[in-house]
Image: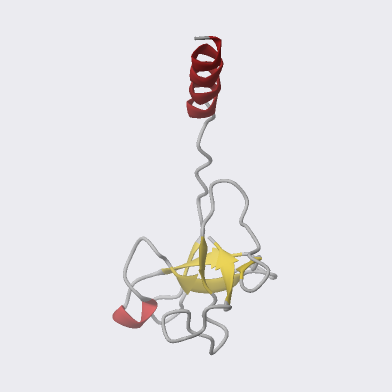
Length: 102
């Protein structure tokens, strides 16, 4: 009984942690003057939208490595996506590809 109460308290506290929502600056697009990213940021496909190759806007992200052989983790609220700047494809045999946090 005591273990169940402690477990329920722990689960309740974990559910009460606020989720971090990051807002990204848009970039790219097939226009005369496409928006660019600030220094130190790169423009990548928005994982919640279509590809910039299909005329969707990208998002500016500060490159932060994740995944790969070391299994690097992203900060809370971000996920690891394939890094578009390299030729390593996790869906084509590149199981140890480094990703970026978005």
